[in-house]
Image (cartoon, rainbow, N blue to C red; front, side, top):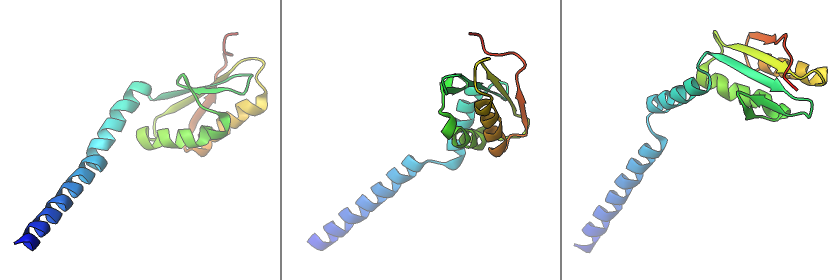
Length: 125
């Protein structure tokens, strides 16, 4: 009798554990839909603005992203919104070293974006 109760309790615990892990990991479709909705609010026009500042700070859609991690960040964004039909515009202040601007453009291209351009207007001072 006790052995049967213990077996039932263990099986119930396993069922609860499996159910919780399914809820935690969730349905891939639901996760992709949530990511898509989030990306649409961050990138509504399928355009990514990268600002490169003279103090070595870089911002993507007003989110500060260090220049040395820009590639990884853009790869994560590309997994959410894709790279097709996405325009990346890099803009910089006049006093920004060109090497930093060039690196931002290169990182966007390495992340898979093909439509990458440099804005003709510098950032306001």
